[in-house]
Amino acid sequence: MAHCCDTPGLMPIELAMKKIWQTILPLTEQETVSLTQLVGRVLAQDICALIDVPGYDNSAMDGYALRAEDVAQFGTLRQIGKSFAGTPFLGTVTPGQCVRIMTGACIPTGADAVVMQENTEAKNDAISVLFPVKVGEAIRRRGEDIRMGEKVLAKGHKISPADIGLLASVGVSQANVFRAPKVAIFSTGDELRQPHETLPEGCIYDSNRYALQALLTQAGMQVLDLGVIADNPNKIRNAFLHGDENADVVITSGGVSVGEADFTREILEELGQIDFWKLAIKPGKPLAFGRLPNSYFFGLPGNPVSSMVTFHQIALPALFWLSGKASPIQRLRLKAKALAPFKKRPGRTDFQRGTYTQDPQGNLTVKPLTNQGSGVLSSITKGNCYVVLENELNQVKEGEYVTIEVFDEYFRAN
Ligand code: AMP
Ligand code: MG
Image (cartoon, rainbow, N blue to C red; front, top):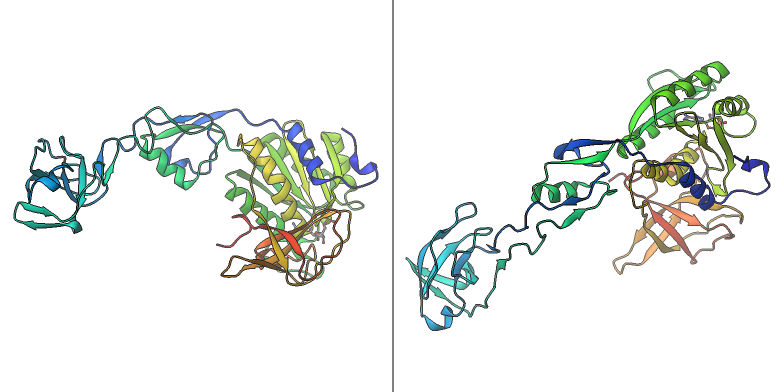
């Protein structure tokens, strides 16, 4: 692999993504998982309905099942029985008759419509229908939602909570899914301490590993947490080897920027084929990606915002690709009017953080978070969107329109 940072200029994010896609082969191993454990997993098979949904013609209302043509012909209809959900009426409705019916109950033989209770008057078993009724009224037809044998979910689909309901409704109690990728993570840096420890002068808390752990768990990955590794070549080598032997992907934070990264780079070059990239994005310029003997490697920048943004924009889509997910993540991008100027220099795509607001007419406005520093994590936690300022853009003036990308469930609090 070429060392892209040796070439002048910065690599556009699209090119980096393309190279990642060309390198990563999706996992193929499968396992059978029961319905209650399927959420977030990626299907390794198409799922076809085992039954029609609904499985039988049934009532959409509480009321009376009848023959529509009888309503005009007879003053009152005679109730001859009841049809409840789970307990159908087994007889036949003949002219002048009706059956008391509840929502979801089977339409009795002979009936072709349901009148809702509110449009009737009942005196013992004599039922007056107050308005005309059309054939088919308030009847949910067998198979109108899903036909038996129809494909309801495709291979490569990532299963959502709503999909779990759908699978249950068509009688599916388990499915073959791809094995979830296992991701080893570690932080590098002698300055890093854990949140329960006291903080000596010159040290900081290791926030990246905790954020990464949470992001990966939310994405349905298995996490192998290797902790903090000191800036020591042997310890770093051992951590890489351990991660490589036990996981599909190794993700580190810190130590990939020029200068300090020297032995990390040396070790990676010794162990695998790694590219060190200078990406044309801000924050997050330095990123390392490549292959170790048994795994893929992402080296995220140490600065917390850079680390989260490069993970979210680059590593996460790649992990989904590895997991067998067929369609790429689609994030909502919209145009919003800037309520303040945005500082920007051409040459990189900025993923600034902002707060958008929508007025009652639906118009979108956006304000930048005041501190856009790559160490200022609160710019993600206080914001609700990226403000994506395209490569060639210069300063944005107040009142101009910018592209926002609404934070998805990985960055959003609700
Ligand atoms: P580095 O890439 O190692 O030079 O780190 C760049 C900046 O990110 C430095 O200010 C580091 O202290 C900080 N940093 C590195 N790793 C972490 C981490 N795990 N959590 C929080 N900050 C970090
Ligand atoms: Mg460091």
